[in-house]
Length: 198
Image 1: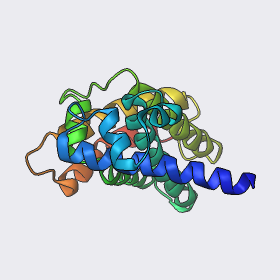
Image 2: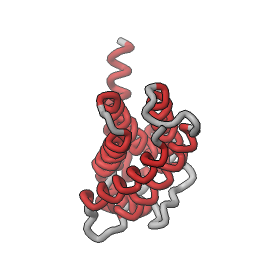
Image 3: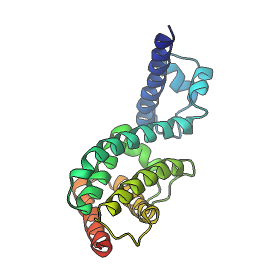
């Protein structure tokens, strides 16, 4: 019985997230209310608040889901990559792809300034990404792929700041060009990792 209840809870949670994405896309993040999300998901507003403390928490749950999926997918493939540039470019590409699938560009425009600043709450999402990236960099150090004199967390923070800025610029383009974005990121990563080579 408890597995049925857990499955129903997860289905309700997903219905709320799906309703939120549809409304964020249709009305914009700021104009969407929790009551509208609840009505579209077929639940009450208090039920939404039971699952998510606020509309902002729904947004973060969507971003965390996208970033976690991207990180998990990329981490499986990273050890097989000979080049750290290829590995980090692949990770960034997966994150961008999943984030743009999770939320419409219009919503990302609302929550990311063109200067790379993100809301305070979203910084917690970025922190999770930095920790995952730092772990990959530690493993690269252990395999002798990058110099051990550099702090993996510092490198991860630096890469995250750069990628956040580039993502904010991407979503503010009239017609976001993923190919040009990937090329700019690759150029920066080549510069960084050529300098970090032991």
